[in-house]
Length: 168
Image (cartoon, rainbow, N blue to C red):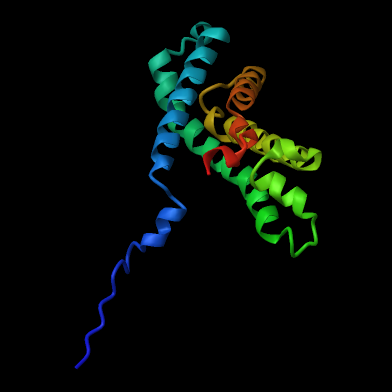
């Protein structure tokens, strides 16, 4: 009787393509950046006058800011991914797709599309933080909006502009 072995049934090895080991470095780096921005907002916007302690503010917001930031980045990156995958099906010029995939500065239209996807990510960073992260923490709408805008501007995924050809 012939036996069949099912290797990696639960965690297939090809899954590492979608979650490479470098992803953990990126996750940690984003956590540090988000932490610095939250602490800077606390002091810059003078949250002390709200009788809100830094430790409370930080602990109640960091994981939401971090998680929603990744969700927003994924939304923007998905736009680029879809264009890269379906671009030829949509009969988009090869130079445009190559620019999006490898070097945004090689084609002005690629650069524009990448900037639009960055702005979409930035919008969602703002939206998620304004509507969810800080809604119960910062009651003043104007202060909540300022905080959310600052975080969105500073943490927008500028790395979308890095030519991936540098890494291959």
